[in-house]
Amino acid sequence: MYAGNRLLSDLFIEQHLSTYVPITYLRDLIIELEHKLVSYFPAYNGFLGVDMMICRNKEHDYRIHPCVEINMRMNMGLVARAFYDRFVHEASEGIFKTVFFKQNGESLQYKTKMVAEDPLIVKDNRIVSGFLPLNPVSEETKFMSFAHIVSG
Image 1 (cartoon, helix red, strand yellow):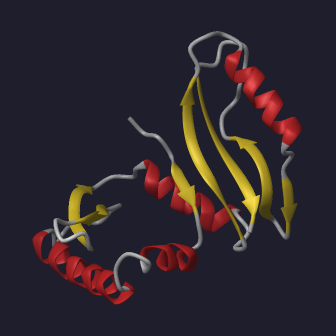
Image 2: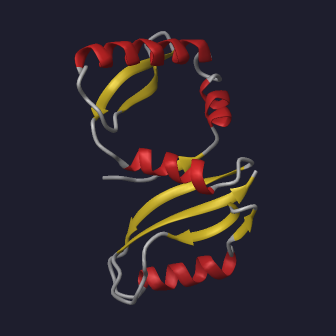
Image 3: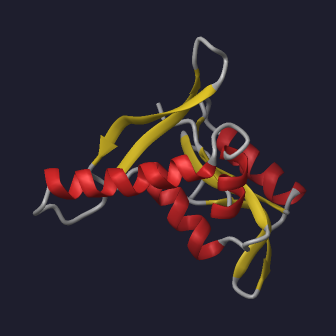
């Protein structure tokens, strides 16, 4: 089940990951994976994402698990990345989520509360901060996707 994505700049992501592994490891791995994937799928033209993770091993240091899953389709991680790149101010960060609400009216109450508490602030056509529902929300809405941005 999709839980959400953090909306962060590439620089922040690299800085965060470099606290676990040298960033050169990740960059080298990306280049190697690109070469291998092109050789395995030479005629493929479309979206492609490789899920990876950083894991602690028995020696209690961290390593990159290079390929948990390959997605040859648009997925929510790619949607979140595109959303950040196109709409979020580079000094801001946030979350991109889809939430299920069990009862009628819950999603509308949540949206109304969040929009009132954290209204959208846009500067130079980029979101600096605020709560933004990404789908229409009514009394019957059960699923709501949203971005919640905070200034950095």
